[in-house]
Length: 221
Image (cartoon, rainbow, N blue to C red; front, side, top):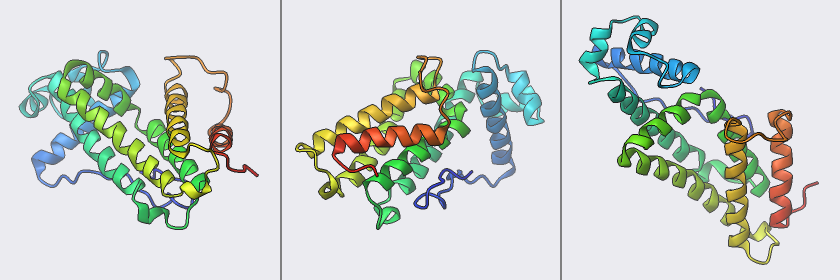
């Protein structure tokens, strides 16, 4: 899937884990079906038989590849985490942002985060379920969040000359914390109703960007 709309991220593609053998293709079909059903119904309300039917296989085949439904959840989390990690590495590669300013980086970050959140709702659902049951999954999820946060932070601080706030690093950290909180509310409105829910994504990005740039001391014209 495409995960960027700005000129800096237009060629950014979701990195998929290659699967080649027949067994791996079967696992991929099952994981794809599980991802779709978990996104639609949640983990608790998607049965193994539902997943088998969506994947065009049998319950026995699923249990041949995965120990149980929880094993399927962890396998899907591992796959999506690996793909997100690889995609994030591409997204925050400094070479991608050659010639970009802070406004470009922040707009690209917001665009990337919304696109991933909109097109991969299963990741939020599965990662929460896995992290609640396993400390290793929780640590991996924290690592993924750190990777994108630190990657964007490095891109912003590499352009610190644009920032007029007297405490540049503090200003960048506050902006990134604010954006993370706003993205959480934007992508998971069930956690907290937002007065900005009626704004379309483009308008929401514009307002969020205006706030961030103002705090950093950049002009927003």
